[in-house]
Length: 157
Image 1 (cartoon, rainbow, N blue to C red):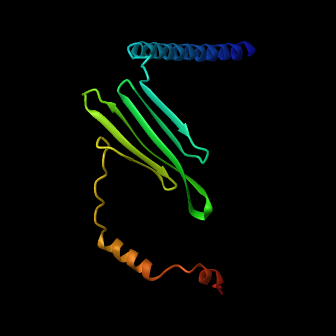
Image 2 (image 1 turned 90 degrees about the vertical axis):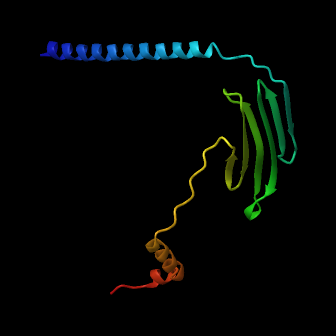
Image 3 (image 1 turned 120 degrees about the vertical axis):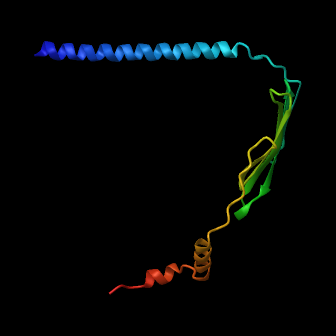
C-alpha cells in the first residue's frame, strides 16, 4: 500500500514538475521576445535640456526635453480647507506620434483630484435626459429631507 501511495505522489510530482518546466520555458520565450523587441528601441536617447528647481515653501519647477519628448511641470502650495496645505501641480507633456503629429497633454492636480486634457483623449458622450419618474423622485427627495434625529427618537410599540 505504501508503494502505491509513493508511486502516486511521484507521478503527481512529475506532472507538477513538467507543468513548471513548461511554464518556465514559456516565460523564457516571452522574455526573449521582449528583449528582441526592445533591442530596436533607442536606449541612450539624449536629454537636450533639463531644469529642476525647488523652493523652500514646497514649490518646484521641472522641465526636460529630448528625443522629441517635452515635459514641463510647476508645483506650488496653497491654503486648503481647514487650514491645511494643498499642493497644486500643473504641467504638460508632448511627444511625436508615429504618424508625425504632435500629441500634447495638459495636466492639473490639486485637492479635488487630477484633470487631464488633450485633443487625442476620448470625450464622454453627453449625459442622457433623466426619465420623468427619476426626476419626480429627486424632486420629492429634495422637498422631504431626511431627518436622522427624528428617526432615532422614534419608538416602536
